[in-house]
Length: 196
Image (cartoon, rainbow, N blue to C red; front, side, top):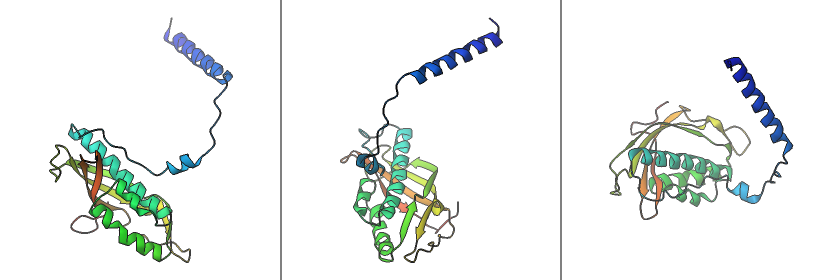
């Protein structure tokens, strides 16, 4: 059989399968439920044990940092309330430094839609306080709040920071007693805001 005939036969076979698939009854589409809406907030899961490699540690730490970013903005979208849920993904400075900002923005009547983006630049396993091999990861990421919109109490757009896109440095550590990764530090580099 020539290549052209083989290709024609394969295309015909695929088309026939597609037609047959259209003849079978489809499953009913589930309607949105409260559960589906509640699960939109990211909830990181335990890792099932300490990391066993640098790659595993970096993947877990990056996932938790992204989840913290999304949860942070979800608190804002929900009216700057119930910020205790940040403890699911952060501890120490990464949690406590967020609280005064939440209170101030709530008091001034600021609202928010959308979620800022966080693009990982680099990640490296570093020595940490928890004595777990591969248990602490330092992450540099580019934080971009232009993908969300905040409004002042009068409905006018809130100003964006300068520079808009900036480097954030974070530390994410594995806590064996909780069997999960938590962001411990999140902020600007020591030298101040850096554009990315």
